[in-house]
Length: 211
Image 1: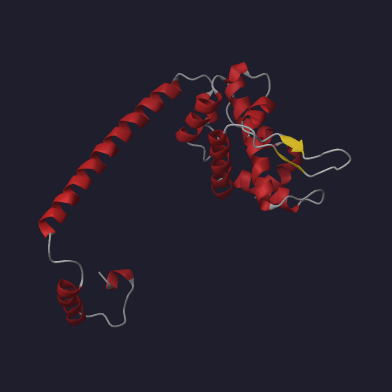
Image 2 (image 1 turned 180 degrees about the horizontal axis):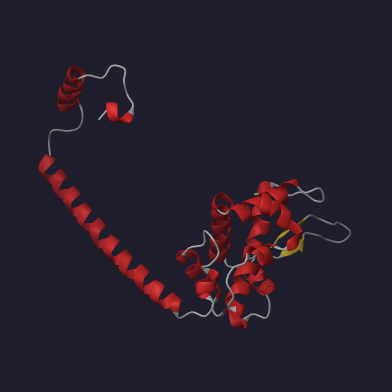
């Protein structure tokens, strides 16, 4: 087994037997082994039960999502999974009740507000006055999209390096959260599949094609 994993130096049957013999007397407790094995069996049975329940739940979610208008179109975004879309819909509800994607952005606490008082003009930041679970879902999703989706990764790079008002990495991720909300809202309400050229805009198309 050592040789199969590329370990060459100091490998031999004598060394292996020596390590096994030492391990038998130097590692772990020698008392309570029967109950320890019993506990492991209980834990494994609980794991199998939870795993089967999770599979059943995922099947129910998948069946439910087939009947949600626009859900399959939202799933057409590369690297977007069932859990993300189901969580998004669970937090937002029926998308037809919103007149624009900006309302969803406000619901997630991603709308901008200025911290000012009197003559003092403070910095403009996101309000974070929204549903924390929706905010967390979007942020985690964008984090994975930047890692696995070449188009979002290219947009992330553009936001950080553009000449006018370049963003810090975290600011760029927040901006991409807003972009993702707009894309999900459009796909979910118009019932159209994801199209990178339309979703990400012609302004960045040359950069995306290179990426």
